[in-house]
Length: 153
Image (cartoon, rainbow, N blue to C red):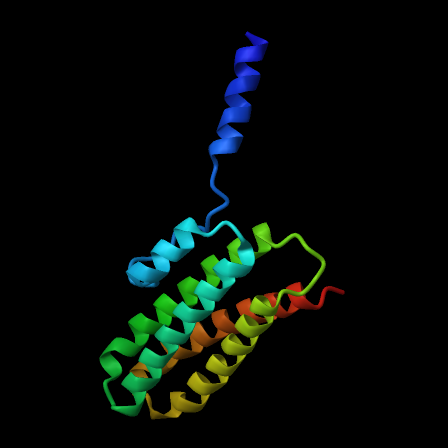
């Protein structure tokens, strides 16, 4: 009985994928989702997160610059959900004491995106200001935790 339970436990652990947490629909393109599912190394998953974050932020910036503000709140929510889920994966799976280059690049991308959206916020309608501020605060918290991961006390 003990041996059977032990074998079931070991088999269960072996079959668990180190994969990333679930992402909201639309946060990842089909290509990004496929790359993320097959990737076992956290450094390579971080590269996928950076690419997805860049894509969503470019969509937000394009919408703002062309005065197409209808999609901005949804895209901001999608972006912050991506940041939250990627941070959970990074914190759970980044074990090394080294600072992976992919994490450094991701932190820089997030920092620049926050600054860019903050600069563009003035162009958004008044009724969207609270949503933008809320998403920027969530993104800033994720950024702060990324920096803490890179530079632990």
